[in-house]
Image (cartoon, rainbow, N blue to C red):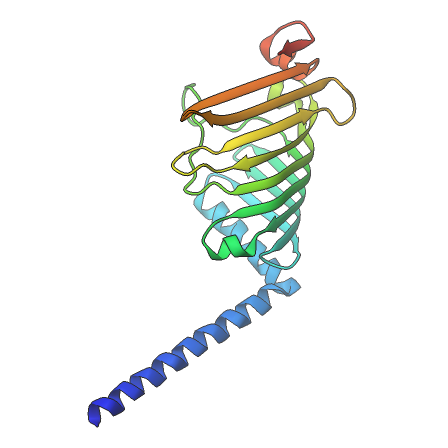
Length: 228
Protein backbone atom coordinates (compact mmCIF):
# COMPACT_ATOMS: atom_id res chain seq x y z
CA UNK A 1 0.00 0.00 0.00
CA UNK A 2 2.71 2.54 0.82
CA UNK A 3 4.24 1.94 -2.60
CA UNK A 4 0.84 2.37 -4.28
CA UNK A 5 0.20 5.63 -2.42
CA UNK A 6 3.68 6.90 -3.35
CA UNK A 7 3.09 6.07 -7.04
CA UNK A 8 -0.27 7.86 -6.99
CA UNK A 9 1.36 10.90 -5.38
CA UNK A 10 4.04 11.06 -8.08
CA UNK A 11 1.45 10.56 -10.82
CA UNK A 12 -0.58 13.48 -9.46
CA UNK A 13 2.55 15.64 -9.35
CA UNK A 14 3.44 14.73 -12.92
CA UNK A 15 -0.09 15.46 -14.14
CA UNK A 16 -0.19 18.78 -12.30
CA UNK A 17 3.22 19.68 -13.71
CA UNK A 18 2.10 18.79 -17.23
CA UNK A 19 -1.10 20.82 -16.80
CA UNK A 20 0.91 23.77 -15.48
CA UNK A 21 3.29 23.61 -18.46
CA UNK A 22 0.34 23.59 -20.87
CA UNK A 23 -1.19 26.54 -19.03
CA UNK A 24 2.06 28.52 -19.22
CA UNK A 25 2.39 27.68 -22.91
CA UNK A 26 -1.17 28.83 -23.55
CA UNK A 27 -0.57 32.08 -21.66
CA UNK A 28 2.66 32.67 -23.62
CA UNK A 29 0.85 32.13 -26.94
CA UNK A 30 -1.95 34.49 -25.92
CA UNK A 31 0.55 37.15 -24.79
CA UNK A 32 2.49 36.86 -28.07
CA UNK A 33 -0.70 37.48 -30.03
CA UNK A 34 -1.18 40.88 -28.37
CA UNK A 35 0.48 44.04 -29.77
CA UNK A 36 2.67 44.48 -26.63
CA UNK A 37 3.71 40.81 -26.84
CA UNK A 38 4.73 41.13 -30.49
CA UNK A 39 6.58 44.36 -29.77
CA UNK A 40 8.43 42.61 -26.94
CA UNK A 41 9.33 39.71 -29.25
CA UNK A 42 10.70 42.13 -31.85
CA UNK A 43 12.76 43.92 -29.19
CA UNK A 44 14.10 40.61 -27.83
CA UNK A 45 15.22 39.35 -31.25
CA UNK A 46 16.78 42.72 -32.10
CA UNK A 47 18.67 42.78 -28.79
CA UNK A 48 19.97 39.21 -29.17
CA UNK A 49 21.31 39.85 -32.67
CA UNK A 50 22.82 43.20 -31.72
CA UNK A 51 24.53 41.79 -28.60
CA UNK A 52 25.89 38.60 -30.15
CA UNK A 53 26.85 39.54 -33.72
CA UNK A 54 28.71 42.30 -35.55
CA UNK A 55 25.39 43.74 -36.76
CA UNK A 56 22.72 45.95 -35.24
CA UNK A 57 19.16 44.78 -35.88
CA UNK A 58 15.99 46.81 -35.54
CA UNK A 59 12.61 45.07 -36.12
CA UNK A 60 9.44 47.15 -36.12
CA UNK A 61 5.79 46.39 -36.67
CA UNK A 62 5.19 42.65 -36.17
CA UNK A 63 1.60 41.58 -36.83
CA UNK A 64 -0.37 38.55 -38.00
CA UNK A 65 -1.41 35.26 -36.38
CA UNK A 66 1.88 33.85 -35.07
CA UNK A 67 3.52 31.60 -36.11
CA UNK A 68 1.42 30.69 -39.16
CA UNK A 69 1.26 34.22 -40.54
CA UNK A 70 3.93 36.83 -39.83
CA UNK A 71 3.99 40.38 -41.17
CA UNK A 72 6.85 42.75 -40.37
CA UNK A 73 6.74 46.39 -41.43
CA UNK A 74 10.47 47.14 -41.27
CA UNK A 75 13.75 45.34 -40.61
CA UNK A 76 16.91 47.45 -40.53
CA UNK A 77 20.38 45.89 -40.41
CA UNK A 78 23.40 48.10 -39.70
CA UNK A 79 27.08 47.25 -39.40
CA UNK A 80 30.06 49.24 -38.15
CA UNK A 81 29.75 51.68 -41.07
CA UNK A 82 26.03 52.33 -40.72
CA UNK A 83 23.15 51.41 -43.04
CA UNK A 84 23.57 47.98 -44.63
CA UNK A 85 20.22 46.32 -45.47
CA UNK A 86 16.61 47.50 -45.12
CA UNK A 87 13.63 45.17 -45.57
CA UNK A 88 10.16 46.68 -45.92
CA UNK A 89 6.89 44.77 -45.98
CA UNK A 90 7.99 41.21 -45.12
CA UNK A 91 5.18 38.66 -45.12
CA UNK A 92 5.67 34.98 -44.23
CA UNK A 93 3.11 32.16 -44.31
CA UNK A 94 4.31 28.97 -42.64
CA UNK A 95 2.98 25.41 -42.63
CA UNK A 96 2.02 24.60 -39.02
CA UNK A 97 2.01 20.85 -39.72
CA UNK A 98 5.61 20.93 -40.91
CA UNK A 99 6.61 23.27 -38.08
CA UNK A 100 5.33 20.75 -35.51
CA UNK A 101 7.56 18.16 -37.20
CA UNK A 102 10.57 20.41 -36.75
CA UNK A 103 10.70 21.57 -40.37
CA UNK A 104 10.49 25.11 -41.67
CA UNK A 105 8.23 25.25 -44.73
CA UNK A 106 7.14 28.61 -46.07
CA UNK A 107 4.15 28.51 -48.35
CA UNK A 108 4.85 32.13 -49.17
CA UNK A 109 7.66 34.62 -48.53
CA UNK A 110 6.96 38.12 -49.83
CA UNK A 111 9.11 41.24 -49.55
CA UNK A 112 7.79 44.55 -50.86
CA UNK A 113 11.25 46.13 -50.99
CA UNK A 114 14.74 45.00 -50.02
CA UNK A 115 17.39 47.72 -50.12
CA UNK A 116 21.11 46.93 -50.04
CA UNK A 117 22.98 50.15 -49.29
CA UNK A 118 26.52 48.89 -49.83
CA UNK A 119 28.77 45.88 -49.60
CA UNK A 120 29.44 44.39 -46.15
CA UNK A 121 32.52 45.35 -44.19
CA UNK A 122 35.31 42.94 -45.19
CA UNK A 123 36.69 40.91 -42.29
CA UNK A 124 39.74 39.46 -44.03
CA UNK A 125 41.70 39.62 -47.25
CA UNK A 126 39.95 38.66 -50.47
CA UNK A 127 39.17 34.98 -50.84
CA UNK A 128 36.88 32.79 -52.91
CA UNK A 129 33.31 33.27 -51.61
CA UNK A 130 31.82 30.31 -49.77
CA UNK A 131 28.14 29.42 -49.85
CA UNK A 132 26.76 29.74 -46.31
CA UNK A 133 25.76 26.43 -44.73
CA UNK A 134 22.68 26.50 -42.50
CA UNK A 135 21.71 23.71 -40.07
CA UNK A 136 18.30 23.50 -41.80
CA UNK A 137 17.39 25.26 -45.03
CA UNK A 138 13.75 26.37 -45.12
CA UNK A 139 11.52 25.20 -47.94
CA UNK A 140 10.03 28.22 -49.73
CA UNK A 141 7.26 27.32 -52.14
CA UNK A 142 6.74 30.88 -53.37
CA UNK A 143 9.42 33.57 -53.04
CA UNK A 144 8.77 37.12 -54.20
CA UNK A 145 10.85 40.27 -53.84
CA UNK A 146 8.88 43.11 -55.37
CA UNK A 147 11.82 45.51 -55.55
CA UNK A 148 15.45 44.66 -54.83
CA UNK A 149 17.21 48.03 -54.73
CA UNK A 150 20.99 47.87 -55.09
CA UNK A 151 22.54 51.22 -54.31
CA UNK A 152 25.46 52.61 -56.29
CA UNK A 153 27.95 51.56 -53.58
CA UNK A 154 27.07 47.90 -54.19
CA UNK A 155 27.84 47.50 -57.89
CA UNK A 156 28.99 50.87 -59.20
CA UNK A 157 25.54 52.07 -60.24
CA UNK A 158 22.04 51.85 -58.87
CA UNK A 159 19.90 48.93 -60.01
CA UNK A 160 16.32 47.89 -59.25
CA UNK A 161 15.34 44.26 -59.75
CA UNK A 162 12.36 41.99 -59.11
CA UNK A 163 12.78 38.35 -58.03
CA UNK A 164 10.39 35.39 -58.08
CA UNK A 165 11.31 31.80 -57.33
CA UNK A 166 11.46 28.76 -55.06
CA UNK A 167 13.90 27.23 -52.57
CA UNK A 168 13.70 23.44 -52.11
CA UNK A 169 15.99 21.67 -49.60
CA UNK A 170 17.47 18.33 -50.65
CA UNK A 171 18.10 15.55 -48.09
CA UNK A 172 21.79 14.98 -47.52
CA UNK A 173 22.82 18.17 -49.33
CA UNK A 174 24.33 21.27 -47.74
CA UNK A 175 22.69 23.59 -50.27
CA UNK A 176 19.08 23.51 -51.55
CA UNK A 177 17.78 23.54 -55.10
CA UNK A 178 17.01 27.12 -56.11
CA UNK A 179 15.09 28.56 -59.05
CA UNK A 180 14.93 32.34 -59.57
CA UNK A 181 13.44 34.58 -62.24
CA UNK A 182 15.04 38.03 -62.20
CA UNK A 183 13.74 41.07 -64.03
CA UNK A 184 13.61 44.86 -63.90
CA UNK A 185 10.17 45.94 -62.64
CA UNK A 186 10.20 49.29 -64.44
CA UNK A 187 11.59 48.28 -67.87
CA UNK A 188 12.95 45.40 -69.95
CA UNK A 189 16.62 46.14 -69.31
CA UNK A 190 17.11 42.98 -67.24
CA UNK A 191 15.75 39.47 -67.82
CA UNK A 192 17.43 36.45 -66.25
CA UNK A 193 16.83 32.92 -65.00
CA UNK A 194 19.09 31.34 -62.40
CA UNK A 195 18.73 27.76 -61.21
CA UNK A 196 20.77 25.39 -59.08
CA UNK A 197 19.86 21.70 -58.84
CA UNK A 198 21.30 18.22 -58.73
CA UNK A 199 21.49 15.97 -61.79
CA UNK A 200 22.67 12.40 -61.19
CA UNK A 201 23.98 13.46 -57.75
CA UNK A 202 26.06 16.25 -59.29
CA UNK A 203 25.38 19.96 -58.72
CA UNK A 204 24.32 21.92 -61.80
CA UNK A 205 24.19 25.70 -62.11
CA UNK A 206 22.26 27.23 -65.01
CA UNK A 207 22.11 30.91 -65.93
CA UNK A 208 20.39 32.56 -68.84
CA UNK A 209 20.03 36.28 -69.03
CA UNK A 210 20.03 39.63 -70.77
CA UNK A 211 21.14 42.78 -68.97
CA UNK A 212 21.84 46.34 -70.05
CA UNK A 213 22.69 47.82 -66.65
CA UNK A 214 24.21 45.82 -63.80
CA UNK A 215 26.32 43.05 -65.37
CA UNK A 216 28.05 45.33 -67.93
CA UNK A 217 29.08 47.57 -65.04
CA UNK A 218 30.31 44.68 -62.89
CA UNK A 219 32.16 42.93 -65.72
CA UNK A 220 33.38 46.11 -67.42
CA UNK A 221 31.80 44.90 -70.67
CA UNK A 222 29.83 46.81 -73.30
CA UNK A 223 26.05 46.57 -72.93
CA UNK A 224 23.97 44.58 -73.43
CA UNK A 225 25.34 41.48 -71.72
CA UNK A 226 23.60 38.29 -72.83
CA UNK A 227 24.06 34.63 -71.90
CA UNK A 228 22.05 31.87 -73.56
